[in-house]
Length: 244
Image (tube, rainbow, N blue to C red; front, top):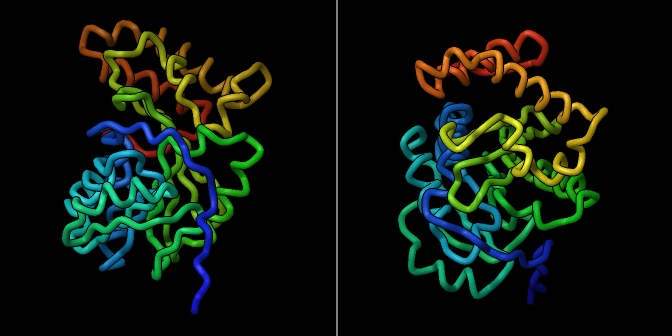
């Protein structure tokens, strides 16, 4: 008889809401959709989906818009949450008991962990990142970050097998007075580093300055102001992607 492997991690609060991760999902589809499509029946993992399965259901729908054969596995360390999610299983979506060990047969092309590590100690993050990245398929991606309860403000880190690649700041612009308002949603690895002398603090300071300088563009809407501020920010910071 095979011994059951105990999931790695601890039970978190499990707070979730429909449409909460829409900004992260859209970014994943835009940046990683091609790799998911080329992989054919790629596996995407929604790690720690919480007390309700909404985020996993939504992830499947959004990813299948760019990769029709992708499959999603929702993983939760709390067995009762898995049992509650099972009625929502469908073609391409299953729910399983598990944690950071990622107990799926295939190496996933995507591991999304939203609002999970925020509830751990900062010193634990690097080890978890390493464990998750080690489970990825070639060209796979780990996306880990934090958002508010309704998904208006979100910051996440993308990691490949080699480690961190990018950090993304996303928001409903009408909810922001300045870009540094996003500091409250920095991932665990960055939130305690938002102090003088640290790169993330300098970045947010410069972003606020660029935002203030772009104030005349507000007459064309918050989006145009944001685009102008980011364009100015890119002079001194390695900004990737474009207005799309």
